[in-house]
Image 1: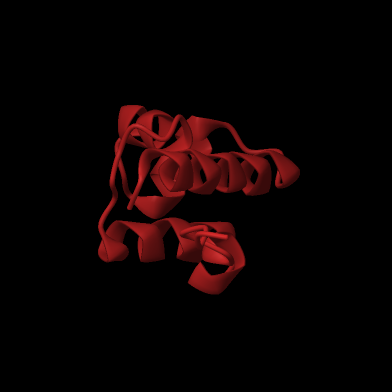
Image 2: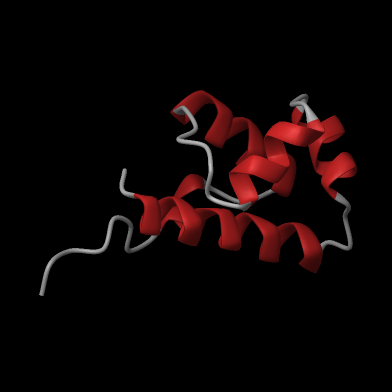
Length: 76
């Protein structure tokens, strides 16, 4: 996955988390992932595995498709 797509995915995760009124720590605890890892995902610094993405989506009560629609962006 390219860097721009990782940043977009991270922004979508952050937006969903904030819409729930959650801190990174709350998301991390719910997803059973380290808080610093969540931060790096939200900043687009991590190329997370599908398993971790599923853990995050389960914690956020959304499906993977909701966060990954249109990713990666296709060339025009």
